[in-house]
Image 1: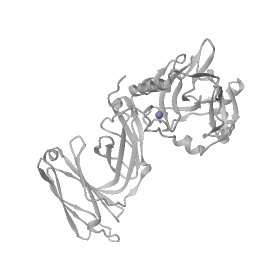
Image 2: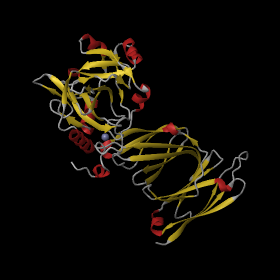
Image 3: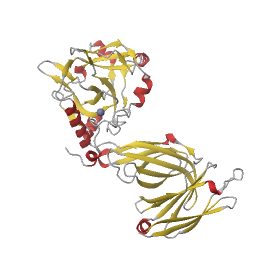
Image 4: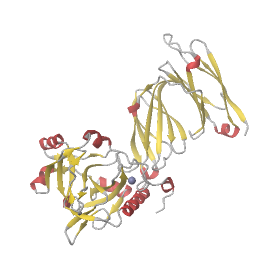
Length: 430
Ligand SMILES: [Zn+2]
């Protein structure tokens, strides 16, 4: 395939030094180019520049970099990146000069995922910057497919809906350039940001994880349990006590599988059903916890009862032990609706993880997994204590409790037992 010349560019700085750049590409690729986005940054200058050209009609162009007389630029220290973009905003080609570290200010905390409609892959970002003009380069990591999108606002915070569907359970990188208009197709750049995220898996993927988790713990070794527990530092419970006794739910962090639909979607409180076992099979509570020295024990019928529903949300490991996250919702609540749409409903009386046995009037847990339960309502501790549904105990702390509970530990991506293969994500076999 012959190469053809797409652009003949002249880069000029304030000292009237110039540099010529010839942009060539394969003929069929060039046919798809609709616009060319040229990003210019400099080793010693805190500002950058962006020029957008109509590829077919502006083959020859001069890019003039406005200089600050106090901080002159040298022509050899410009870094020039060119993206060829098609009519659908997809990047069909890119080229650049040797990489030079730019001085553009980094504004890292400015992007987050604001809203997601998981089944249709619709994602909305929240972008917070003072600049009016923003250029977003969204890259799908696995395929390196890129889209270059322009968005404008009055400055400050804006929500921006990505105009094409994202694939489920996939990693994306958003690079943002922030600037302001200098005239038609010409922008100054003042800052940039880098943001990575993983899209949520679909319900059919959660079903595959459910299957993996049930295979993992077969044949089931179970044990009767009567309470779930929640470890927190002493001051956490003291604050609740002095504030009226209600423990309020909060948004789940990003721990566990990064693609779990539960992450940052609904609020709740985590409890554990994890026990240790003596060599002769007797359960006992772990002597230490990474989450705090005070332990609240709540009787299981408070969670597992006819007014609540149970869902399977996640199966993961960090180092050694495998974890399963179950969600308990109040039937008919907002969280219940969410779980019904995105997670796997579990029969409270008959499942491989944690269930109630009617004949024995007792709950059983699977001893081969660390079962964690996310309860999606506030809990009035005073009420539970009064009715003998709850009590406190103390234990030792390991590690830094703050860091662990807030950020959440990521899943071990190397484990073949609890990670779906890329084939399963693309075309799930149920
Ligand atoms: Zn694993």
